[in-house]
Amino acid sequence: MSIPIERTTSARLDAPMVASHDLTNVPADHMFMAEYANGEWKSARIHKYQPIPMAPLALGLHYAQIVFEGMKAYKMQGDKIGVFRTGRHHERFNRSLVRMCMPEVPLQLFADAIHTLVDVDKDWVPPGPDAAYYIRPFVIASEERMGLKSADEFLFMVVGGPFRPLYQKPLRVKVERVYTRAAHGGTGFAKCAGNYAAAMYPTKLAQQEGFDQVIWTDARDHAFVEESGTMNLAFVINGAVVTPPVSDTILDGVTRDTMLTIARDLGLQVEERPVSVEELHAGLKSGTVTEAFGVGTAASIAPIQTISVDGEDLHLSISPDKMMFTLKKHLDDIRYGIIPDEKGWMNIIGGVAT
Ligand SMILES: *Cc1c(COP(=O)(O)O)cnc(C)c1O
Image 1 (cartoon, protein in one colour):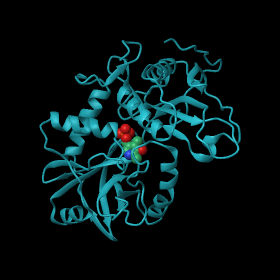
Image 2: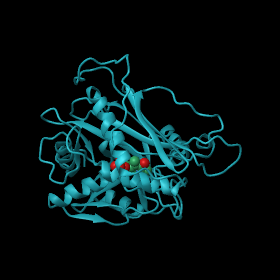
Image 3: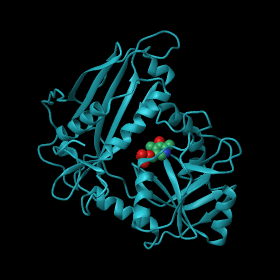
């Protein structure tokens, strides 16, 4: 499919971004847009980044029929640009859309939208280490309607921009024993907007107590750990990489899946199994839990230094020999094209579509 492109007449870059560029964490010049009506996606196009027309009574604005993804494009060695695991993000996008009663986006449309936008904005892809072009595909119910119903009209958009994480301190997190992110039968596995609005208040309370994030626990008993903020959660326990299994309450992270694949390929022992707060607490005290980290597209792998369990702060060492840094290096080396991409995770822009 070839998507019509109307380039901006006021481009803000005249050469590819360099590492020291001060334009960062801002939208790039262009965006993708398509509309859904009468049962089909149509009018796919790329034009300048601009506000979108939206009726005040658009259903998405009131009832949160909104689904999104978060992905990244990397500047690879040899000046290639690669989008990480488009296919896997697409599968999750459609799972989220189905759960929210929204129309699926075909793989071809999703991949073409993203890969063409990144090609148009390729000067905006910053070089590593750590920097990347963040990609935000999303669908919102745009039908104008007084009263609750599932919409019949939607907008599919993709926006993006250079993203460079600030120096990140190791995290201080608190095991959340009161509030709930996701319950069985709910929407925790979906990247739907309402999940994030509902997480803000408990996160704010934790931040007022001096923590960066909460560790969410199961909704029924608050006895098993699930995720940390908007990242999956992993530990090293007795030398094995341990992470709770994905479920309808634990989001199936692309970074999590990638990290586990790399860990297995490196010959590390991997365990996907429930981790109770009790096991975590005892293991932090006895020293069998030696690492804890968050795993997600935004931060890649985020070291956790302090975990608070029912008011008791327990600390971990963040020395450079920790397994999480080996895993992060392999992940980054594939993304930035420093080691071969044997799994076909990188979609090279301008190359053969995958
Ligand atoms: C996006 C997200 C993750 C991480 O998923 P990635 O695909 O690795 O970015 C984990 N948990 C939640 C709740 C998320 O929204």
